[in-house]
Image 1: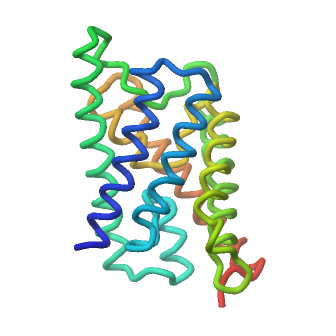
Image 2 (image 1 turned 135 degrees about the vertical axis):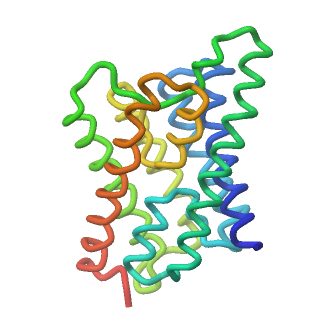
Length: 216
């Protein structure tokens, strides 16, 4: 239960701080990217020693493919991640409503400016790059555990900055699930893309990472 609780709390922290920068703080692109990046860094150092610090179903999928986690743990990790993101979005909705802002604007991800095909490519690509960094920096063979959390956070921040105006920069099915459930609308109808595309990127990264020697 400690591992699953750590995954819940880490994902909660990520979604709460990241979407809070979007909604409550009304941050710029740079602010939002830094908020998500630093949130994952803080969560990694705070809870990563307990669970490995996935906080993202796509990360768990890649770790499962490369046998760094069991199938049973993978299922419960993903359940904990989705619950953490949903709880964070529920609280954020209360905060947004308390400020008198629109409660259907919760930092949800969507792609109103581009086509579905391009949005799928964006999310799959940025997730692939993100997972490739994670798999290599946490590798027992050539990784760097001391700086893994910082490296992962910086990578996530920059990738979100690039993707923000295209797809909202999810890279994480749980991060998109929480806000979409409460915001509804097109964010909910497009949720499938934010589940499938990151998983495709993660699967590709798992095999490319293995090819590059990330696994024993």
